[in-house]
Length: 330
Length: 75
Image (cartoon, rainbow over all chains, first blue to last red; front, side, top):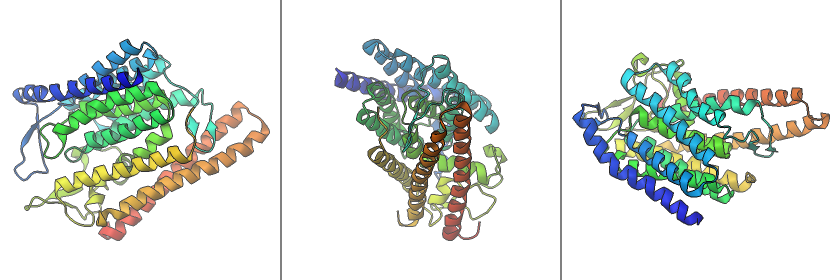
């Protein structure tokens, strides 16, 4: 029965997203909702905010699980509502271009459905310590955790396919982790989320035919955050997301705090006439992960994207090793 | 991957330091539990964890910028 639910959850979210993405792209294009692909010499215009298709995929698959399994529907509802709240904030950002400080604060709202529905376990497992009781601290940390994952994924979309590809890798790791630790509800939710991100990646990878927009990246960040907060394995998720955390932390600390794109006076990279991207050697430029990747030599966008995903695979392997060497189940 | 090898090393060091940090925290928590469980001690444990985490973030930033300087030169 579990295998049937698992395959169904994955297939529903994958197919829904795969089928809806080109249709939503056409719609966005017809409405003039396009973004410039800045890393291409000819600067093509690509349909924006198409990440709504992942939201549809997540929603239908989670609804299926909620009806089919009838157990743990609280978890499905909490994850669903968190994603919706984050997506709405992302959508608002797409239209109104929110300041970074407002983005960070508003993203915390996506944690409240989990708190209100009490869909969390305030006894996380910490490596070498075991279960710790954080009855007060844990619910206070949930909005912060959701804001971190949401904004980390939002900042991790510098090149085609980086966000959707890295999210797929992280969700694959979490799917395996939940299966190994016997958390089958989380295993099903993770598969439902993975299907959508993987389907979207097919269109978003280099050369991208669609952009997710903030609506998509916020939804994906909230999906990962809410999955982990409701189901455990917090430490594993943090390790798997080390490249994304490194990227957002370095941006914040080297650009002097929460600054929007318009406030950053020196861009971290530049596009050369031959189509290669190179790192800017200016100490005023923020230290992004892409700038680090390009530090040794200029590269094509495809090479940068591949490197970004390879780093995520590496950190996911480290996260998997963590599960093996430190008992985190039960 | 050759000229990005230093980023992999950076991530590996971050992971190892996280594991060491948790091990040290476990040692501290086990020591403090000798004095029984109380809200004050639990709060102290959480505060120590947060401080350790902030220290780790600071050291990670130092390490990354040092690595980066070696690769790209003075920034």
